[in-house]
Every structure is written in C-alpha cells, then in structure tokens.
Image (cartoon, rainbow, N blue to C red; front, side, top):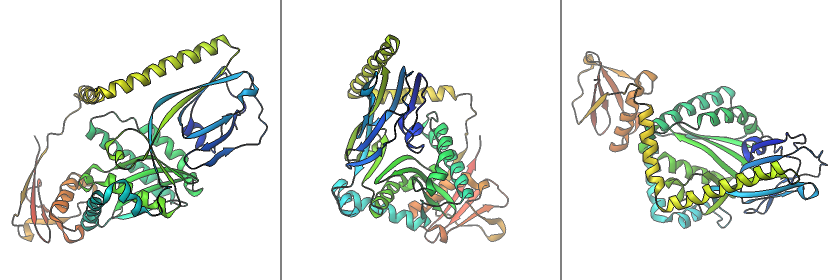
Length: 402
C-alpha cells in the first residue's frame, strides 16, 4: 500500500502498481475482474491517509476492472475518462480449445493454420518452451538480449521508431523473480537453440496479460504470429486461464481471435478543496475527451492509414543519412552443385552467415524441405556464392554489393 504520496503523482496502473506486488495507493480498497467475477485485490489494512494530495493520476486501467476506493471518506474526488480500446479473448463459454477455435475462427481458418503449423514443424522442427515457475538466469538474459535485437529489426522492417525498447529494459528488471512466483512467463519458439519468437506474459489468477511478442524477421514466411497465438490459447486451456488479454492496438492479427473489446481509462483523483487541483483535473479531462472523440472520428475517415504513411515517410526522412544496404541476392533454382573441391559446407545458423538465414528458410518453406536434411555450401573461390542442397531441390545464392 502506498501511504505517503507526493502532492502530484502519476502512475501506470500495470507498470507502476499492479506488477509491483499490487502496491496500490492507500485509497484503493477492492478491485474486481468483471469478466471473471473474481476479486483481484482486496485490503483490510487501515490506510495512513495522505492529506496533501493535490492530484493523483492512474492511467491505462482496463475498464473491466472495477475499482472501489475510500475517497468518499475524504476531500478527494475522482473523474475517469476513456483513452483507447483494448482487446481480449474470453474462454469461459468453451470447454475445449478446439471448440473455441472452431467457433471463433471457423473450421476453414483453423485447418489453414494447422497447415501452417505442419509446414513449420516439417521445415525446422522447432521446440516450444513456456518458462513458468523456473528459468536459468543465463538463458533469461540471453532471451532479453535476443528480444531487443529482433524487436529493433522488426521496427526497422516496418519503418517505425522503436518505442518498445525502454519497456523491454523494465520488463527485464522485474520478470525474473515473477517467473518463479508464477506471476509471469516467457514463451519461446526455438530453431535448435536459436530463439525465433519470444513472448512476455504476466499472469494473475485466471488472467494472462499478453504484453509483448516479437518474431525474427528471417522466419517471417512461417506465420509465427498466429501460430504463437494458438500455442498461447492452448496453454491457457491447459492451465485454467479464462481470460487472455491482448492489450491495446487494433492490429489485423488480433481481430480474428478477440471476442471482448474494452476501454483503457485514466482516473484522476484530486483535492476537491483545492482550486488549482480542480482546474488541473478539469483541463486534463477536456483535452483527453476531445482527443478520444477526434481519434474515433479520424478512424472513421480512415485517417490512420494516411497517418501510417506519414510515419513511414518521417522515419525514412530521419534515417536518410544512414548508409543503406544495397546488397542484392540473386536466386537460381535447380542448379548443379559443384564438386566438393570447389565448395565447403557451412553452418548457416552461425552469426557470420546471418545474411543467408532468410533465404535458407525461404528455400525450406517453398520446397517442403527439412533443415535436418539440407546442406549449405560456400564457394571456396567466389566468396559471394552459396549453394543449398535439399532432398528435392537445389539453389544457388549469388550476393552482389554495390
């Protein structure tokens, strides 16, 4: 319980309060999850009421959480207003995962996703690990290092500035302990020992908060985003999780899964006897309500599509001084592999050959090949020439830098 608050404070509901052992301000009395009808937080402690509060702002509160406070016993008053939509999957009406998938995405789409899964399993035979209850510290640190790397690459691919990195540093600080307490989990898809999809989750009772997920762009052809979601949904059913909260962001990959839409809210608690505090609260309310309405109007006008193009243009403009990679890759299929004296076998997963990884995966995916049955060779005389030999096909990769 936070007793001694400064006159003006601002908290992220999850990052500053919920994930820190549910250390809420003293006026929080009870929190109920209205989807699950479960009590998330309840205190009988006698608060040491802070009398010098002017404004206390708590933001990013899902409105399916019903928060009871004790401010009615004080000079404090509360105003709440919407920020943006959040999206969740509620499993309470389904007894099995397959029943949910058939009802939510349909048999045709489910079968298509199963084919994607079979293709992934055929090509690279990945392993799947949910770190929940235990994890080696060295692997924990390696996963976060890799997550930061693939996130940076993903943002570069999307031509967007990386706003996730500061949050990843924060998650790294808090999640190790929480995994052992079963309050958090990290789900990883591995190609051998290489993480190719990493997901950070927080868990509270029967709720999983799906906070961050990213895949290696060199494996983009495998539809990892959707397959990762299915793996999480199955894990939820196996572990009695009833609510899979996918958070904010109206992304295409979410729409087919979610069956609940809610609002994130901001709550302002202010001193009703302070003119300054009252004016500040009213000003914030007016600005945010205006912003929320304008965003809704602009979305109807599809302004967000134009804004997305502007963001990409701005990104390109700010990065135009960065030296561009003008390397080209020419692909030739069905070639004759040279004799052994002209080529040497390499491990394409080694860092020095990271530029080949996308093309090897593309070869595996398109030709229904297994990575355990292919060989990748380097030309001993022409360093820019590589060969892939599979059970069904062959390929030559010619790299040219300009």
